[in-house]
Length: 405
Length: 135
Image 1 (spheres, rainbow over the protein chains, first blue to last red):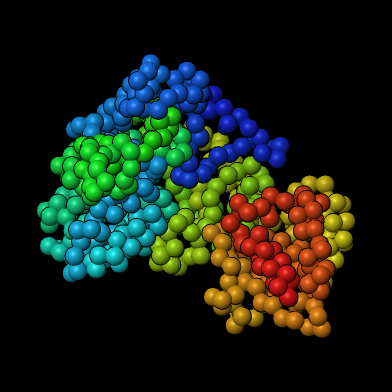
Image 2 (cartoon, rainbow over the protein chains, first blue to last red):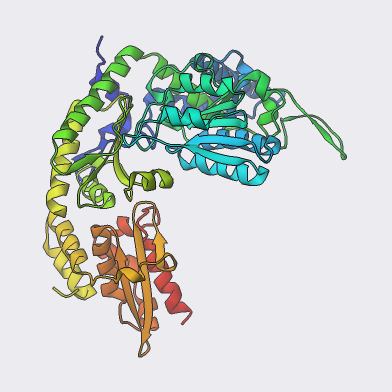
């Protein structure tokens, strides 16, 4: 069955907008996706009908808010195939999820032990592990990529050893679109006794994620890249690992007993969720997930594949355009440079034609250095993009090339 | 062409009726921005934007501030030329008296000088104003 993309677009009110009198062509989906009406309605509905704090109030509204908020946790748990609902920890986003894990690890890592990341890391993963290593005396190891942007699996395996306590890598590279073989990597890392964290920010919106099947210990992702609101995300962690994880922030909700001298911590998930949570965000994120799950996911994946193939084909035929990142397994991202032009200039001229892309280092400065580019222009695709929009991108690029020559 | 005065630029840009001509004009300005010596493009002169970098060198001559600027992106160079038309070889008093936001509004380019754009332009303007203030 094919996806009715035009009907799907109708559900995203923002896509009908014009920019400088031209139809918006939104190709910055790796930065954030647009929001379907069903998600927007869920937010409005929460604030209109049942806003109250959760787990506290002795009244109807608080009960109702708590019920919806905890039901949202169940939705996420089902979506990623968590084995228990307590494994779903609400965060402000992927970055906070990674920080919770890195903060805990920095208390456990010792000198001589190692953390292994990859050259395609986003700063959220790279800088966070770098700092955890600096604090604990552990060593940060970086697994190289091949020139096409795929992970060098052989080199990765060489770097893995008994001293490796943590392996962290992206499900999908935000800058290049490379889809990593995370199941295979998790198995290799687990065999050496390391914990495995997958940065799922770019992986989660493109198909079904099954954390148990992946075999990792942590999977972190954001709501806003999954058609949900900003400021909400999830850290999934294996229950046995999370149960005694060093507490992250302290405060209300996460405690069991408090005296002036000391405190004891509550059980999962609350022990890692101090303070009033982002209640509306959690409910909005669950609404986005429910909406996403109502689609024919096989059709979604086939549509996305077709979009990327169409874009890649035109890119290869485009004189003076160089693709950055041509790994055989890619999802949703086309990173490129126009020879002789700075990516920022390309972005300016595309913007004036209504085409929204991102330019720059994509929060991956060491990766840009490795690839020998100052940055790239990145078009990132989502399920509501059309083949015509891909054509409009290349038409706009032609104009940019002419103007910048 | 030499870099025109800020008033000339406002008049030039008013003359164009579509964005392509306007941007072509800015690109041409960028191409004519006096080149900065590569030796001057050092870390301490660098204003890092997440999309493009800008370098700024300052000298004082006869009570006036003389600037050299450069970016790795051509349109940013063009926008820097607009900033130079307003600020270069002016006294600190003149720099502080100049309404830069009004100027970019008149040019219909205020979006580019907003703090949200990672092109380093706002930071350069802030730096120049700071230099003038502490003079």
